[in-house]
Image 1 (cartoon, one colour):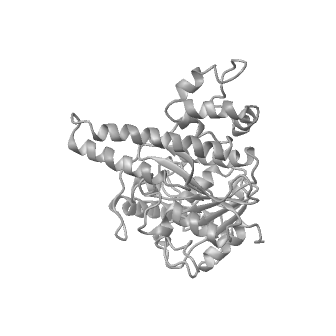
Image 2 (cartoon, helix red, strand yellow):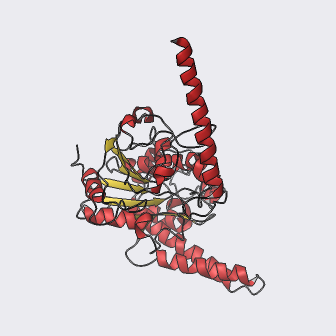
Image 3 (tube, one colour):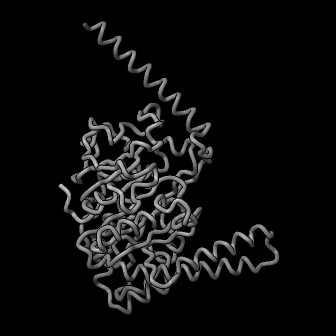
Length: 383
């Protein structure tokens, strides 16, 4: 019996090695028409302008240092702003718009105003670059395109909760009243999402805005939904998509976002995690005060079982039978792969019906069984 057990273990190890090799071939060569991915450098750390914020002693009536964005908890940030007058808040927004706009725990409406100001400032910089005849034509064209993108985010009615111009750009937008909502949901997207693709019209329900707006509508506008593109996502299929490197860099940002919602007086949010976004959610789970973790089209959450996520949140999983994610081996070997399929009953997640989802980016499409189920979870009516 012992020899049979050892033989079975050797066979299992050999199978995992073969599967890992197959996974490597898939992500390096590309699959199903997807482009080979390029390696991305994760954007981490506080946004530009933090040095000036740290040096500012005039905003506090007692000359005390402002809370450090790199170390202060969202609860500390919330307490700080509670003790300020309206004028003091406005002064900080005028002096340090980009910093205030990205402080989890700060009042949402103050962050909207700060990010509006920061977007205008960044747009002005890009317009200056576009008009600089000494720059190469390619750089001037890129500056014009970025200025136009900022103008789109400045459209009336948009509530920009976070904005970071570094790298490919990061942004978060709110639908609904985040201050008054009894239920809050957060959309966490997967690969190929950044400032430019955040609200693209092509493949709409694979974008944060498409998923967020659809969920908001499906709840009858009875929730607040945050479409969050606050981490550096993989581009295409490549080593970034097959490993947890970018997810590990993004998970603390997601956890702070959830902590900030609660610190600002909101409920524990439900996290809706699509594709590679579910890897981010899996790694953020122990620190994110979430009511629910919902994954759709997941390559794995870098754990073997839902119980290993170390969260009090309810865990749900949806996978359409026609989703190409099924072709990705659900293993985790030598840093490649993301572990057990969350839709596998053995994982222990609650199943979400998704027969009508139609492919990898159809889970939030109007009229689908998956979206109806998501709306019930968002409203707290699913059991």
